[in-house]
Amino acid sequence: MEEESKIYPSSDQPRMAALELLRLVRDEGAYANLALPQVLRKYKLNGRDAAFTVELAYGVLRNQSLYDAMAQKCSSRALVAVEPEIIDILRLGIHQIYAMRVPDHAAVDTCASLARVSVKGKDAGHIKARVGFVNAVLRCITKSEFDIETLSLGERYSHQDWIVQAFEESLVHNGLAERDLETLLRANNTAADPVIAVREGDQEIVGTIPGRWSNQARVLTDVIPLELDQVRDGSAIVQDEGSQLVAQAFLLAKPTGPESSWLDMCAGPGGKAALISDAVPDGVEFIAVDLHQHRVDLMSKIVGSSAQLLTGDARERPWGNRFFDRVLLDAPCSGLGALRRRPEARWRKTKRETLALTGLQEELLLAAIDSTRIGGIIAYVTCSPYIEETWAVVDSVLQARTDIQREDARDLFPGVSDLGSGPYVQLWPHVHGTDAMFFALLRRI
Image (cartoon, rainbow, N blue to C red; front, side, top):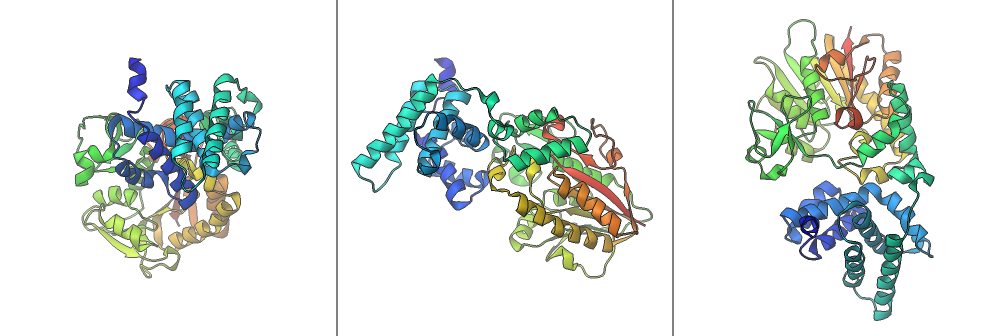
């Protein structure tokens, strides 16, 4: 009973909040991490109840195709014909039954109540049918055994099939065995603790532990970011350790000759630019650019005074005909490397839309080369392991240009193990505990 009290909410408000968050993601295209704070404020949730809401909603987003397969086995109706809200309620119930320490009867009864109280403007017969359907399916779930080994990897781990295939191809291409695939998919479904980058000194912060690779990283184990004074005052920023590592690699790279200017081409919302701005030497100018004004506004709140911020399309070189010693291109990409932190993204990405980004990535990389002086370096970065956005983009540009050469980037990640055979670096959630960041180093010759 004591164990149950640690996770069982004091009322149905946490479940109502989780259901609303799922609705915002489904109907309004909201990002779960951005919508979550407003939902928690609306339902006045904190502490244990807020944690319950997060685990419940994010668990559903991570596992929805698995839960749909389970629900379908207990439903005489095709789920495609069921109200989306009822499907969300079923998913909430299944996650409590299979992944949380909620008693079966509590999961069934509270979800039946959700089906009753969440409906508006419907007659009693409709409400009774909703409640009866939810009750029947979830009671069947509690009494059934499911052999998930009969499901495809996409269903079992709730990833679109094309994403599963893309991950498998990338693992093999980067020298990892195909058997790593399930480990990677499982890692994408495991909640990642928030990580911050400490910008000032070697601070000991209560409720955190040191990161695995970056000296600046602190993993939050017992606090949330906004509870930390360091985050509120800007001396620390929320940033995955993988992003910290690529910013540090950019700083460790060595152009030939003296330096006077650096460029971050697609800098918003500014996490990497903030760490770079902290390290800009005296006499070196640092320009950070983004296409969207609202992202430049976000940057202005966290980057140091050494940065000059510009708004514009980096392909058109809003900095004019200047040449830089270092250029960072953190290219717009699918974000497939951050699925463990953005679980809803796996359902929104399409292969066609992702492949369409490769043209933009190549254009930006060509602009980066044209803006780099001879002897200068270009860091091409994506938060994606997809070969079409990583190796293929860089190799395509290398074939088109004779004035650049690729360099081995592994030495720019000191202390980080399992970096493969080079020359590019691909980080992995299941290997390094980071987002799946890709880093390529090029030099203008």
